[in-house]
Image (cartoon, rainbow over all chains, first blue to last red; front, side):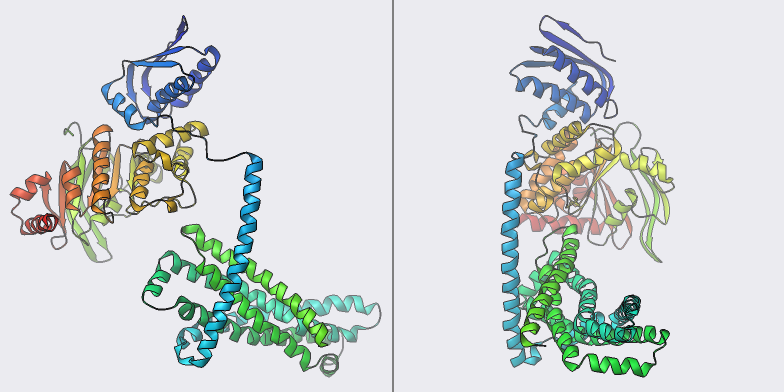
Length: 369
Length: 256
């Protein structure tokens, strides 16, 4: 295989036989160890015994050459076949610096913090700008309702509304049931089980119903909007729309937003209905007749609570659909970009819902609702 | 470029069909080690199907495809992997992995099929990039590259494991004439320098004349090979009307 030796200040390396990608690691380690140990001024490589040398073998020769060159020392290769010599020339990356273009850890931290700050700012700006664009185009739409793609809007409303009835209803029912059951256990200590109806009704109407339904819409439809529009972006379909003179916002975004704003209150109503049913079941199981439940429900909460909750869903619907579409339009290129857009649509959709809910809480407090 | 030894690819009596619709039939040809072999034909003639069959993506209805003596059609899973290590493919649009830079795109293959150290893998990947003239773009992402660069990077990835055969799908399609000529030059240079066989699937006449030692020509209506030989011979001597039309019409266009 290989027979090496040091004479004077030079290292003789003999490579022979079949040098391919499977064997090269061993030779590489051996040669690297010798080079490090002896630090020779000249390396003489005898390659005359090589019967076969693939690109990995050529890589070994190039590595020894580059190693010597980087220390201002010499390397001579003898007996290399013409074919291998041609490969050597073809593959030689010369003095190209292998180290990835990175600074120190502190630099990288600073760069990342800076980039993150700027991107948060840009993101906020683009969200506000996008919402503004949607608003102005909605106003134009109200003046000319015929310009909206109503067929698309209805299909989208069906997909994000009617098709979501099952999951919204199930979640509403379970939340009503669980909430009633959990609070009944605590309230029993005070002999106040009958007030379970008050607690569940108010919390469902004002907070839980709208929030849960909004989460369902964000994860089902917000992500779908982002993925659909994102895929269109990747396929240059958005560019095609623009050059055809069709505004993507009017063509794609407004139907989705209208669908979102239309279906979320309706879905929430359905969710609430099933939630009350779940609560009623628990009350029945505790031995209260249905009429007691209905009576408690009516005294504890009024239309203000119901419509206060539903009013919020209009804003939630706008936020979910708007952010979904915005993330779709912001999609970059590549296979992972669409996935990122969908993820980001759900995450920032949910964050926006919670933030908006907080604003509503303050607003309702001052309005005395 | 000499026709030595046994053929490295032997295709025998191949039939390709989608459902009941036959796309190709009676396809038989040999590719010899070291040559640059062209598969030529117009749109819809089945050349992409033929390529997919040769690289094992699509199962032929009948026939044999021997690559270095092993039949791709009847191979077991383990045998297929053996065959796949002997071939490299450049897809039409590169098909580079978008989430990785160029070095990692090439290093991935080395990581999976060898036990080389990371340093060594990166060095080998860089050499492959140098061979296609892209060493300066080693840390770029595919999305940052032009179409021509992406195709060149894809060739570098196809060479990662020193395959015996490299398949190139439309290497110069979608490129401007200058870039396209540079691409042909690169392939010619690689084909002359490396001890590899190149199989080029294309409809571009300039590429075929620049690269290929021998070509087969497929015809949509005949659904089979209508001509075999060196490109110049076909242009001058073929008496098949479709072949004459193909060369005649296209050379007129390239003259203007």
